[in-house]
Length: 99
Image (cartoon, rainbow, N blue to C red; front, top):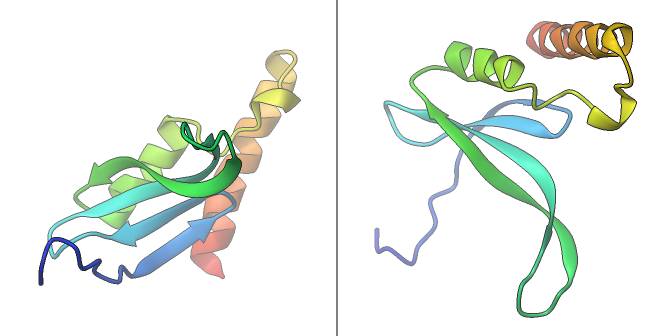
């Protein structure tokens, strides 16, 4: 495979705006769908951005939770709303694993 060819990656699990994707035989990566701005055209668009590499799917899911990539920062106004967001993110991971 040449450097210009892009290998098709397997998506193992997707939860909201995060997904765990196969990278190679030893690693998986976490990607997050984020709104980005093209520096040349100034156009805003959503695209998958690599957030981290992990040795296993389990470690990737822990990474998503530990880095709080599923928490809606706009919905957090106090400690109770933060705890609610944490509970919701934990439940989203569990639901994705069951479904």
